Length: 74
Image 1 (cartoon, rainbow, N blue to C red):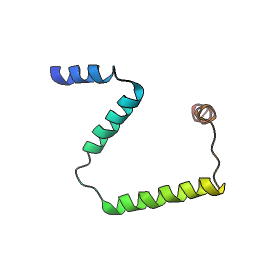
Image 2: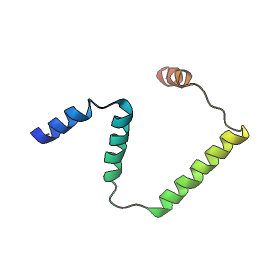
Image 3: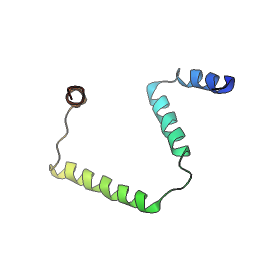
């Protein structure tokens, strides 16, 4: 990394977590030069299905602490 990039990174790391997450998302999105509309539509359908599963009780949520415990125990 050059000096300017390092300075920008240092400043970004001082941001609150929500701002860092938003910045990271924006940077990742900027890497996609071509948007595949079929993929976007497929993801929109999947998101709608998952929301419906939650609303109808077909899917159950777990607290983050439990999900984290399960992930780390693998």
